[in-house]
Each structure stands twice: as C-alpha cells, then as structure tokens.
Length: 100
Image (cartoon, rainbow, N blue to C red; front, side):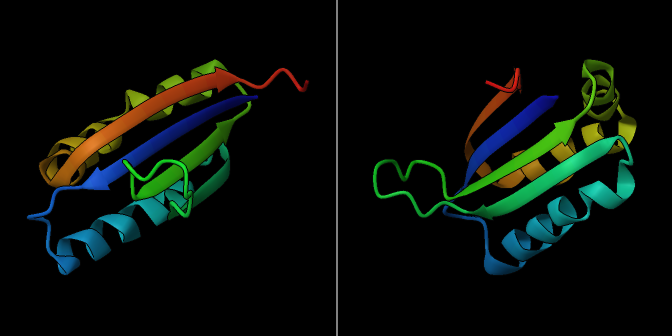
C-alpha cells in the first residue's frame, strides 16, 4: 500500500469562496481516480504544529497507481490552476505502508 499525504495552508489572500471551491475539488478526487482506494481530507487540529491548516491522505495499492494519478493531466491542471495559486505552504510525502 502506498500512502500519499499532502499538508497545506492557504495564502491569507485566498478568500472563502476560493477555499471552499478548492476543498470541494479535492473531496471529489476519489470519484475521478478509481485506483485511489482510500481518501481523507480535513482540518488540522494539532496543537503541536499549525503551519498547515489542512491535510489530505490518499491510498493506492501500487506505486504505479500513485504515479498514474500524479502524472495525469487532470491532476496537473488542478494543481496548476486551482491549488498552487492560493496555497502558501505545502508538504508532500508518499510512503510505502509495510504494515508494521
């Protein structure tokens, strides 16, 4: 299992409509990518680190499933046109879940 995690914070200039629209687009990702076998999106409630306001995790059975998602034109367009323009900070990590 491959877990892909994205932590992010909006730019202060991003208005509520832009935020709402992007979060709705992100929530729709599992419907668009059948290779995605798990998905979570939510607000960061950590009292230890608040650099990022939101987090998203998705799971894929194979590395090729993740790569197909990341390299798809739909994903690239979402990042370029909707995500990057209103995001101040992001952290992206993909890990192999070895079941330990």
